[in-house]
Length: 294
Image (cartoon, rainbow, N blue to C red; front, side):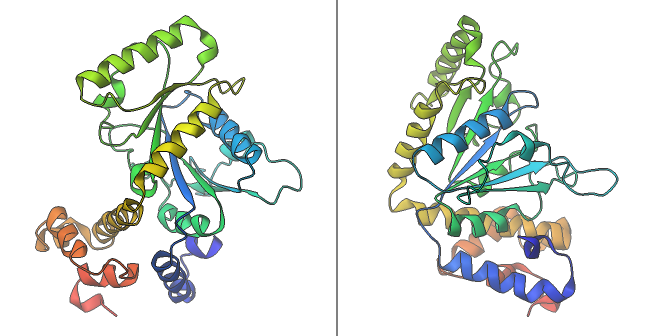
């Protein structure tokens, strides 16, 4: 994991070879779940309950907790790690804090690569973001499924749609279910809204991060949707990896270079035309300026 976040030139080749190997020999069983929502909604508390439920079912768990960056050091503040309980001596749970470093997408720069590593080693991988907003939707590009947490009585149950999350979530969670009627009312409002938006089949689960109520039902819903992906899982992951490469090319070489490729949709189409088992470094080379290719 340290290798993935290293900026040393001496580590570049080793980092590339590791990512290529993991991406082209995927471990299909490692289910990746993204968790996002506005600050204060109880993401970290619910994450801890999810980890506990997975461990109760005998599953190993890797957690990528993307924390705000320290303004002094640039590293992760480590707040989320302290809220995710890990039993002493339990090697089947690994929590890694990563610094967002002011990225609008809510994720750290090396999150996709970290997901590849953890997916190869753990039965479940949980990616928790800093927060959610107009641009903070990158979590969906790393996860097989994404949970968006909604705050009861937040004043506008459709705020997650206004925030640009309509195409992001696979499941909705109304956390703080211990608030009683107000939480149940929010769940009803969300279900009505989803029906209008032709998303009536989207699960809306009522949970309590404080008591753990509803978490087993949430895990069951995740498993059911993951199983339904079936043979489409490899294609989904391949598509999301290619979307990640397009974003990486934009960050590395700028929007001007992306325009020379015909824009993001054209660049993505180029990558989709390549073989499904094409290594990430080769995908990157396919879009990079000729002068920078290996």
